[in-house]
Image (cartoon, rainbow, N blue to C red):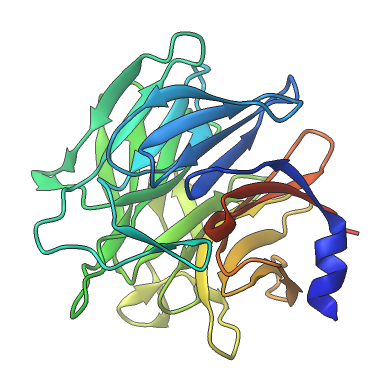
Amino acid sequence: AASDVYKRQLRDVATGLCFPEGPIALADGSFLVVGIEAGRVSRISADGVVSTLADTGGGPNGAALGPDGRVYICNNGGMAFHHSDGLILPGHGEEDAATGWIDAIDLETGVVETLYRECDGRPLIAPNDLVFDAAGGFYFTDHGKSRKYDRDRGGVYYAQADGSDINRVWAPMEGPNGIGLSPDGDTLYVAETPTGRLWAFDIVSPGKIDRSPGPAPWQPGRLLANPTGYHMFDSLAVDAAGDVWIGTIPNGLTRVSPDGDVTYYPMPDLLPTNICFDAGGQAYVTLSSQGRLAAFDLS
């Protein structure tokens, strides 16, 4: 019954998308989304018309507007998908899967500039999501790749928007995915996919977190939420009130307050991956397995 309620509260903005993620609500009423399966970044007009901004190749994943007005993209390098019963579903990575990179795309021309492919001589494996801070740099997660019998350990990075500098903020993490900042910019939130955990780290300066021991001598930060039951966390967004909204697999969104209070919202899709907000506070969610971007009524 609860899922039926949320079906009535959802309004499609666009359909037929190729595993959409990274939604951005632009000031003119249009949207940007990535299509991971298609290796494409698309613009959705205010009346729902979908057009291609750029073909990036690989697997464009997270997206964020930079201080220069370009859209910055975490590209995971590409991933396998298969179609089953009308749904788009991700598969396991291959042993020789390509590594990923960070792009910046001009919104007027669609020109793509690749900024980063490695850090300290180590390749970025599968950059996933990113967020800009007030200093003009951006934090991003490297999710790593999952294969049938093993997976990479990931981490969090900080980079300059002009491609001049990148550093590792913290590693290892277990499949870090969604990343966001508190409204005051003092707290960094990171969601891990396979563990279903939400971490909070205190920021001491741009690109630097407090590495003091947290729940264990080897683990900094605070475990803000780790709900019971089977779930995986995907990308996240922080609303104006400071609540963290996380795409939750399967079939939900999870809202976590800065104090760790958890509320779950059922969604009518197996893989609700990302959420974003427009200037008025309206929420939008990518229902990725169905290829939809939908408006979500928070009330």
